[in-house]
Image (cartoon, rainbow, N blue to C red):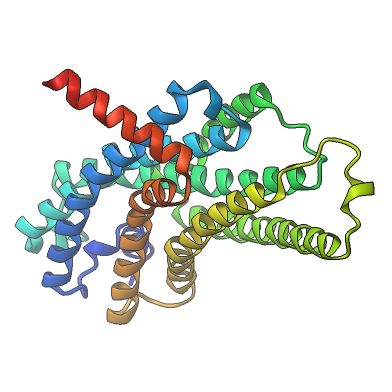
Length: 312
């Protein structure tokens, strides 16, 4: 298998020749269903945070950034991914023979847009999750210097950082380098996030031990964090983190497999499943927000009522 074929296959796993036709069709249908749900859910969460001034805290601003990424994923990545799959399904024979003939322009365009936007959203999500975990740890230890305005600036910076690497992925000039960079970034982000949350839960455990020993009165002469409320928010972020691990670790493993071995039927199937999990993440986030965060849930409920009342 030549390098160009390997790069194209890895960048778009659903297009591998060994992937069964029913699996490609099922994935295309699932992603077509995910897209509008992800857009509506994340847009409601983002609007709920932005329209309520009491929710504009550093942690919620970062959550709004994740929701915005989910909206972009649902608007650009998934629709063009579905379009690319449909083009493949309707013109399978020609696209399988791309090494011998020119691929359809629509196939190349939809693949470039879905791959580039997907790489961008992938990196932004990783960076936001890492920064969120560090912010929670600093806040828990009362060393946080992050206020609303610096958080907004940081969010803008995190949204700009992944653009060059995502553009490289669109160009496909350094596809091998891109995969190595993505794997490296993912490993670093997961490591930092894991360490930060380990320290957060260690702080919570130590605080609980102090409560049982009746030592809190002398230690809380200064304004203290509401640890019970804060512990709930930490567990909420932990659920989001768990969803992040479940959805993004398989694609990292799939990239590693693509680097060290040729694409076969098993690798192609694993790449397909991993791709579906990545596209599932923007759908899971708003569901987690509405389940775990009462203030966001109430605000979204009021927003939906207002929309329906205006519609009637």
